[in-house]
Length: 252
Picture (tube, rainbow, N blue to C red):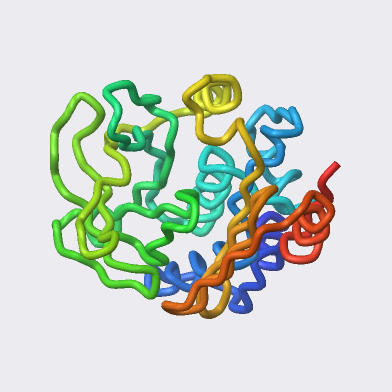
């Protein structure tokens, strides 16, 4: 095993030495549990080049998290190093407004036994925690129900969908063609500076737990365990303490 994979496995506390296709769901869960979705680099004006070396330095060496254009590329690099047939794809997150920030979400497309799958570890707390097939079937996870639906629009060829409160909702549309580092950097500029960006206004940190997930903002701390949810209002000092204790992130 090379140094990168060894460091990657240590970061997410994955104990096996190899990864089969059937193991990817465990890899996704461990990643979601130990690598938070967090936007503190955006909030604190810390920009990185999004190269493999920079992503490794931030997420593995500095034990930070990131947003989709950081988390999914690092996971992609690990899958590629493990020998899987993968490439990065770009998508556009759905909202009810006509104007959408196009090609600012990213995920990994994997082929196994001639079948395509979507792998996404960077969509906030909406982790399917397993590869999603392109068959249109609904996949049930501990986090909810998901499916990939063929649906040609201006924004993509397929849609990532999730059942929310009994209703099937579109998360994002995406194309299946490979994207490169330039696309990641363009998205970083948009997410960092655009007035419609949901991630440049206030801090957001989230990660999976064994039985749910936790979400932290500068005003609230939410703990979800199964179907039980508790939410408390917090001050700045408590936010800083929780960011360090629960996410290992020192907030300036």
